[in-house]
Image (cartoon, rainbow, N blue to C red; front, side, top):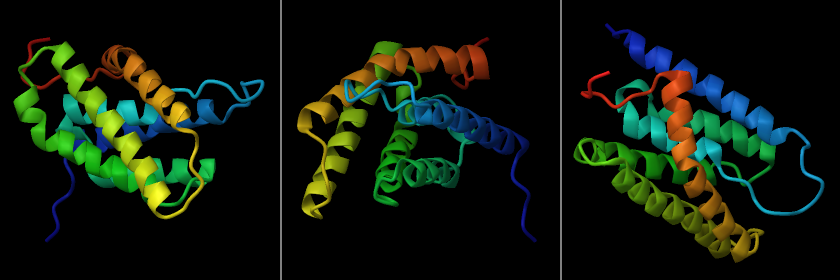
Length: 170
């Protein structure tokens, strides 16, 4: 007989999907007046924060589903970015127990390296398969913006969603 998923997994997945929907809605709003600086990938930052803070509350298929919907709505190559996000978040999830007791600056540095590797890996695969590739400067600015917004996403996840590291006193 198949066991039902735990309540915290369902609640965490639904909260993540709600937050991802809000982020995607804001991203689709026509707020810019033309080409300019690329914004941060807040869904990527939220996925990493969630996996590093509460890995037991978010299943991998939920992350893939949210990023795949983002791919469809933003008209990116289907499946490429969700695969890279899945590989990155699962790499972070497997190392989470080792990172748990370290300070925030170490977590931020490791997340920055992971974000840079994911965005540059996405770009490399696009080049290999002769897909349209944005300028390297745009990709690097997106890395910088995403890394710069990571602490704000951590604060928002903590205060708005109640995401805290397991094992730490409240």
